Length: 112
Length: 117
Image 1 (cartoon, chains in turn cyan, brown):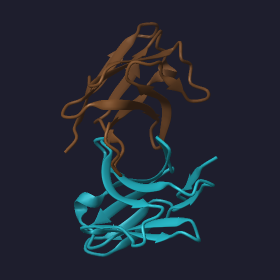
Image 2: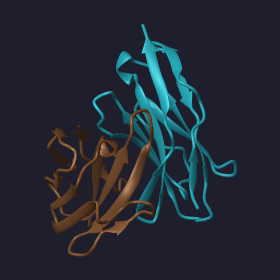
Image 3: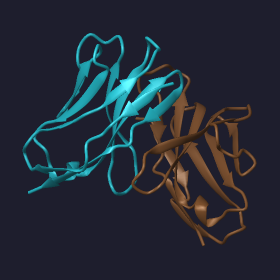
């Protein structure tokens, strides 16, 4: 069985600062993919970043980077230079086969 | 980029009635579509997976007779909530995956907010 764990409570972040969102996962499948999605209050799921289990380097997409520690089974999201528009729920998800399993999410509020 | 639409974006219906939600892939052929449900302040829970032309595969605990899923074409899947009750009120999100294997396997629709009165 797969499992995604996001345990941080809601976070307040000062604008322009960096924030790290924790995600740990559990799987016995050697081939998997890890995703981070952003869900603003409008409800849409916005893809942010992807890390494949065999990828050697940590993924980066603009201000988003993924700190992938395979041995620890963690895939933390780092958002640099936070902006007010970053206020949202952030979900970590893992793909096994064709299915996606989501964590419970982290609420981030960026304050000016 | 791949675009997935949902219709309606929100719907209010009376208890006991049925409501249909459409999910369309606008610029690609979706061989597989997924339906999720999300309660307020909670995560997305996968309800079912549907492949074009075949019966949907439901997750454990999801009533297939209550949540009818049809994936009749490569660009359209529908979710029908039959005999809706207030506890079915939720945010329903679909996602779609195309033929080509890409790392971004699922493209999400904007969601449909269902309120049953």
